[in-house]
Image (cartoon, rainbow, N blue to C red; front, side, top):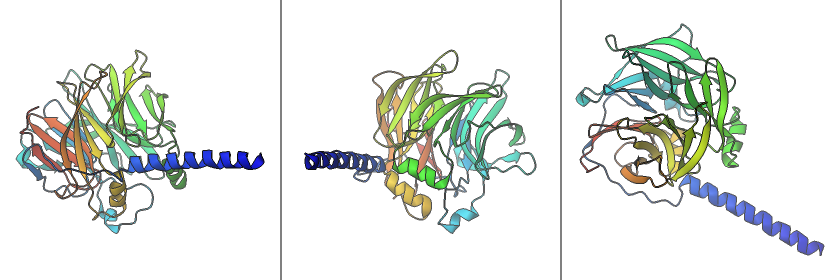
Amino acid sequence: MAAKLLLALVAVLSAVIVNHIAKIISAAGVLKHVYNHVPGTCRLVPGVEQGSEDIALTSSGLAFISSGLLPPGFILDPVYYTFEQKMLVFDFKNPAEGAKEIKIVLASGEDFMPHGLSVYEDDSGEVRLFVVNHGKGHRDSVEIFRFDAASNSLHHLKSVKHPLLYSLNDVVATGPETFYATNDKYTTGLYSRMAETWLLLPWSNVVYYSDGEAAIVADGLMYANGINISPDGRFVYVANPTTGVVIVYHRQDDNTLTFSHDITLHTGVDNIYVDATTGDLWVGAHQKPIQFSVHMQNASYPCGSQVLRIQDPATENPRVTEMYSDDGQAGLWGSSAACYLNKQLLIGTVNHRLMHCTVDVPL
């Protein structure tokens, strides 16, 4: 009898382990094949060599771009030590001008490593840029800037720090000083974060901040990555690359979030751009995250890039179209963001180049 119980226990344990390994293989994209295609004529934007991790667009067609993000944890490739943390701007009305660096007026001594971005524009025309900032010693914050177009500069207005804003990835503004933000991990230590990743622990969350107070409004995610909001403010979208889905939440009057549905995409979704006119989502993604993880430790190792367009995302029957896909041959490695405007597509990467494409295919 004891032998049978032991065999049953071994069988159950083996099934659990095999199922866990299968989930890791699926999340890593090990068995996936990538087909290359582009929406039109694509070119690498000159001068962007150290990443374009997130892109946030103004109503006038200016795209803010974060650059210089370092890999988390141990840095094995010395090229990353040459990275300069900066903000860039790209004008969709004048794409031939490329990306220009923005002057940042920041408090003296403040660390600055930009990550996720969000734009907020008020009725007076003032443009504010919300920036996820990784300070030294795991001191994450959201920095709020005012953009001065005349001098092409960002003027620091406020630094938001809170105990619940501890492992920030992305941010979406909901007012002049209010926002949702994602914590991609629950822990901040190197080995504990590795354990979260390999054990597929659903400890990640979404936080809402207003008037000095913060609250967790969604949790139970394996990796809360990019976040954005529908044009009418009724839905919040969160990318979860580990499970390959974009999660759709109903936004309540008190700013809490209620789960609506998942948009299953079977890829490593990263940042989400929302078209202000159509409400479509444009998502930068990693088809084979296992290759991207190698690229993060070896900057010369090529990995693929992918852009998805999601129509009717707030409904139960969204339509998904792959707008760009490349296995690395085109020279764009590790796409993390995509921004569409007027038949143009701008594709950002975590720590590589920036690509501009014309969109000649019918939409």
